[in-house]
Length: 233
Image 1 (cartoon, rainbow, N blue to C red):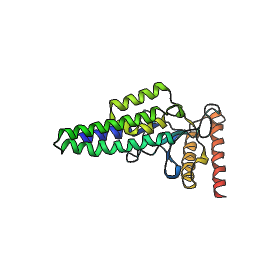
Image 2 (image 1 turned 135 degrees about the vertical axis):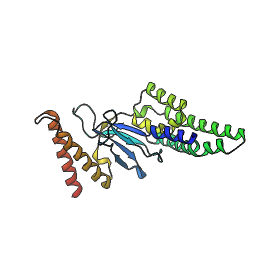
Image 3 (image 1 turned 60 degrees about the horizontal axis):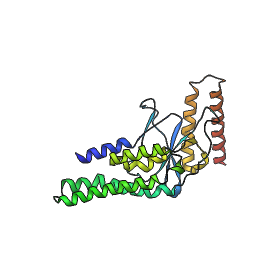
Image 4 (image 1 turned 45 degrees about the horizontal axis):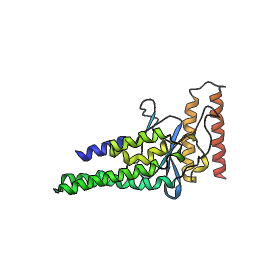
């Protein structure tokens, strides 16, 4: 029962809600960014749900918009982010996942020695503190306010399973900017451009012809077509 509770809390924490014009970038091997889109068939609170891979808490994610109604609303391109400052916290969080979901339930249910049980619990909280300290010292490069940092860290202390996703949460709280198509590897670019094009065409069905939004969407589609031509060449 304890294991199911911990897993349930963790899976719930992996659920992300995205606006229809948003996607996530997941960092893979060699600092390659892979696009992740929410489900546009099932909506929760008028947003698209996306379940982050629960088995890979070390893969950091960024929130990006593929479309903006105002040219001045967001700045295009990648913001300066010190990825190295979050990597150590991600490693601690991965170890915490193993401790809480695998080792802790085994010790609580099987091992009869109380001292060993207490030791495992202390180790779990030591990892929680390690994750929080690693992130709290480096929240400024992500553009996160001090109050937001304190709020996220307090939630992790109050409910340790939430700490497993803490590095990914810090990235998700960073400033949102427009998507830079050049960030993708060739194989991922094709998938991302095709998906965004489909969503842009679908959005065109609900806007007035000649409106500013309609013109912006057509400009985006022209940009995507140009990107596809350049990739083929």
